[in-house]
Structure formats: structure tokens, C-alpha cells
Length: 319
Image (cartoon, rainbow, N blue to C red):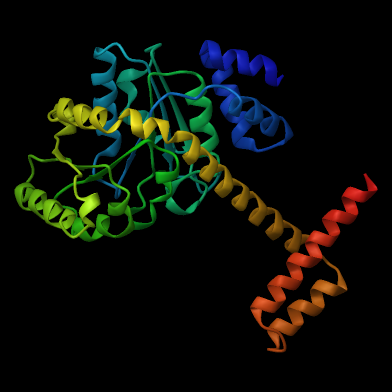
């Protein structure tokens, strides 16, 4: 199965590409094997991430940017992280609705992913999905986050260029984007630039940049009106300028760092699952000692990790 899907990815077969993404999202044995094969392929497509607080018009901006790229003859793939349905856990598909003008365009592939409550607005499988789309050799891969504000910084591990979007008239929009999310920005966009107080907001963003370290102050601020497609050529030029040869040659190191984080996340989930299912007297004793103050969390954590490691080693010995 995996081999046929890899061939489908390379051929950009839309049906097989969709199946491949579903498989790596599911994180089962088949998806794990498929992702292993994807990681052995060339993944040279530049990845551009759009993030920022809710309500700033990210999806409309992405739609306008896609239109610009298509007029330039470039193919585009999009992984848009939507809020999860509280009933099904699936993506609500709001981003797909705002990009409907690109439906039916064979040069555009759009996939909505459910955030499933993940911190940072990222679905647990977003890294792998971005790799699948990059392996399909689209000219540009776009990642759009659900928009959770200050914590939405994990996208820095995915993208070559990070576009942080803000807009005037959303309360304290400067507060909404300044902390961690400002630090990851390669480009700042002030969308809805035709609304009241836009000039003041633009000045505030530029002032915020001056508070950064000297080496990190050369972040362009681009004013756009996504609904009118105003400012999109300037945004595209800023993104192109950031996609330098040096940045793209850094990708092997970035991929290694990302693999380290993925392994840490997977290991943490495995430990959580193991502890939730473990019913041994040993674990019950550790929990009781923590609950009654007879053991510190640090010492108890070390003991639990040792207990799990011993269980894994014993299981491997039996196989």
C-alpha cells in the first residue's frame, strides 16, 4: 500500500495524495511506514506559514496569495488547520470555504486538518502532512494555523518563512501578537489596512520591532487589504526575498531538530498512555507517595521512567 501511495504523491494524484495524508494523520503502523518512505524522498518545496490571532483575515489573505502564485504559473498546496468539531473531532472546514475560488484548480491542493485541541493551533500531524506536500514537489506549500495568538509559535518548526498577520480594530491587537509569536516572524502583515486606526497600528508594529534584538529587527511590515487583493504583490515579494538560498540550505538541520521534537512528543504520549493503563502495585505505591508528600515529583518521575524502561526492555527480550 505505502509504495503505491508514494508513487501517487510523486505524481500529485489528488485522490492518492488525500489518502496518504489521511494515513499519516492517523499515526498507525501503515502511516508510520508511509512517512518513513516520504522522509527518504526529496522535499524541496518552500514552506510558508501564516499565523496570527483569530479574525485578522488569514484565510482570505492566503486565498489572495494563492491567486497571485497561480497567475505566476506556480502550483500550490495548502494545509489549513481548522478548529475541531466538538462532536466529531474533525475539521470544521472554515478555511476551505474562504478559499472556494480555487476549488477545481488542478494546480491547487487544499487540505483542512483538525486541531484536536493541540496547543499552538497545530494538529499533531501537521509536520508530517507538510512533508508529504513538500515531497509532492508543489512550487509552494502553505501552512495556515487556526489562530490561537501568543502560543501559536510551534509553526516555526515547520516553515521556511513565517508570516505573522495582525489587523487594527480587534481590541489590543498589539498585545495579541507581541510575545512569543512576534519573535518567530519573518514578515509582519497588517491586514484590513483600509479600516480605522490602521496607520496607528502600522506604527505600533514598527515600534515593537525596535524592541527586538538588533539582529532580528529587519522584519518587513506589509500593509494589505486581502478582500481587495491590495498589497499582495508586495507580500509575495517579501516572502520571495526571505526564501534565500541560505535559508533553504538550513533545512537539513531544521529537519533534524524537528525529528527530535517529534520523537519527544511521541515518547511523551507513549508514557502518558502507559501510565493511564498501568494498574501495577508498583505504580500505585509511587502515586500514593506523591499524593501524601512522602516522595517528590522529581524522584517519582525518575522512578516511573525507570519502571517503564524496564517494562519495554523486558518486552523486547520476549520478542
